[in-house]
Image 1 (spheres, rainbow, N blue to C red):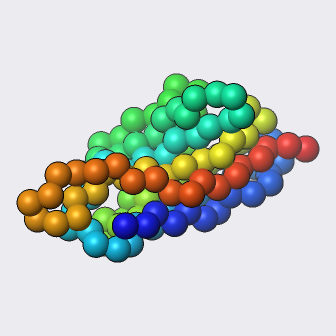
Image 2: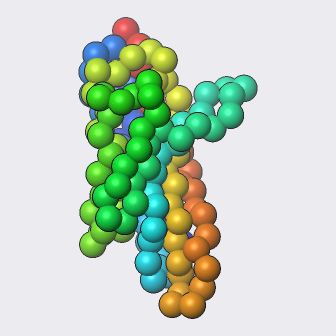
Image 3: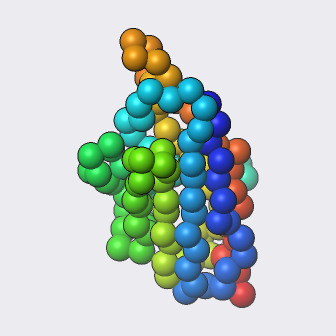
Length: 120
C-alpha cells in the first residue's frame, strides 16, 4: 500500500493551499483517513481526520480555516487550507487505516510528507 501526497508549497499568510492524498495497492477497505503535521523538534500532531462516513474532527487552531474531505471511490483524502498562518508551516503527512484483505485487521499507513511553508 502507498499513500502519495501532493499540493504542498510556499504561500503567503492569508493564502490557501489544497493537499491531496491517494492510497493505492492492495486495499479492501479504508476506515479513518486524516492529516498530521510536524515541525522540527516537535511531535507529530493530528490536524484533521475523517471517518469513512464523513464524520470529521479538527485541531482547535485550524477549526474554521481547514476543511477535510474524502472521495471513497478514489481512496483519496483532501485538506483545503484557507487563511493560512505562519504557524501552519510544517510537513504534512497523510494517514489512513487500511484493511488490505477481507479478513485482515486494519493497519496504519503514512504518506511521505509534503512541506507547507507560510511566509511573506
